[in-house]
Figure (cartoon, rainbow, N blue to C red):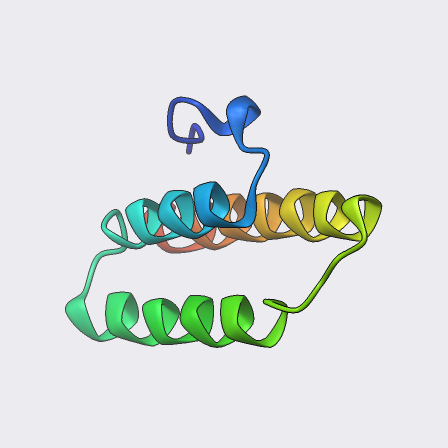
Length: 77
């Protein structure tokens, strides 16, 4: 599964949040979409106080890799 267009442009947490929500739309069932939307919202809220730019970039890169893995996992079947 190819990542959505513009993944290399993600620099801020809000951009990441919107990207991940767009990824959720590609999941096959509405129950999965709802589950991952909730997980994205929880992750965003739990890291909202993060100030370190390096740490933010690490979180962004990891979240993108995780999203690609999940999309690949569920669209492969």
